Image 1 (cartoon, rainbow, N blue to C red):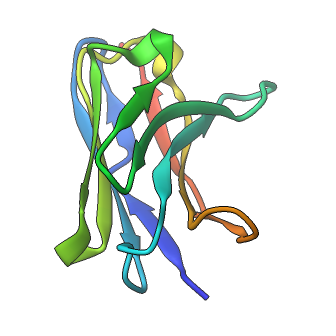
Image 2: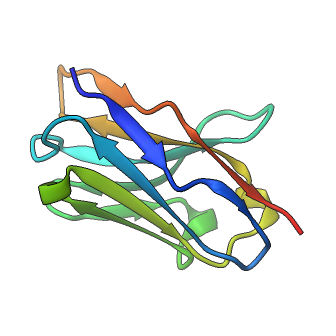
Length: 117
């Protein structure tokens, strides 16, 4: 059983930056896919950014060019660098990890990001 703990959320003004971290209780080297989803009030949970074991990345169109996902296997941590934040980025951000077919998904508890002037 792997536990995921997010940190780095908070409140920031439009145009500001935040870096989210997701620390796993065990090794992340076996995870095929890791990433971040977000859920705004009254909306569904949507993919923000994903990174695979070979380093390939995928971003939602709304965050391309502003957000960067990375992973550090030695620290068992996945990061999301968020720049040029907009009010519409306000949401609870969830960390996600998945080993591959026939395996379960792992989710963190979520961290609130609020972009407001």
